[in-house]
Image (tube, rainbow, N blue to C red; front, side, top):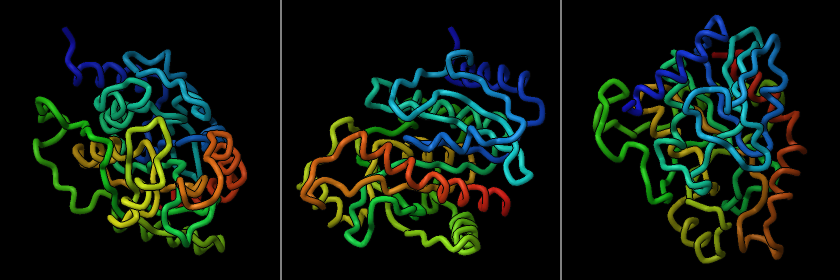
Length: 273
């Protein structure tokens, strides 16, 4: 019977045989943000269902494709869409794609998502650099037996999101005249949106944005020694912040509206790595 490590390696070897030169930069694209992958030059596209053991993705705004191509003169491997725990995946499956990227030699990982704004100074459409996170998902991808080939039992999380990479993001934003926010991202299980009381509680704990992804991937990446940068598109203001309900359509519409700014920021970051 194959182990988790074996399955990760099987997927990595399948990709390695099909993409040629392996990039050192990986990008995970969240809800409605897949346009970056579509714009990679000279790309090789592998639908997730063709890659051994890859967990299926069945969420609107997630294309479900691995794309390898060139951005700003650098080879990049992008995951256009991710698996979520609320789809029924366990945390190790949620982190599977990041594990594969690590085994392929990716050393710098950019995690992106669409998130609800908790900080009252934010607005829908803002871009936020993630400085830290709160894991309120109730789970951790490192739970269970530890495989030392992936990382040590108790990885340090003092700096889950690289200070150096955050400075790179600020430099890239400044160069294109883009104002970016900074803040703490809180991860929740979903799929229901949060209640106003939950948002008030998260705000009191120092959270600036809320979402249903990213944290498991960041933990797994740091477990493997990858340097991580996190970027959130504030796709809506969180529950109770405005006198209106939250809809999936609003999330995707906002991601579409800020697509050009988001891509320009990513291109600027990649060019500086």
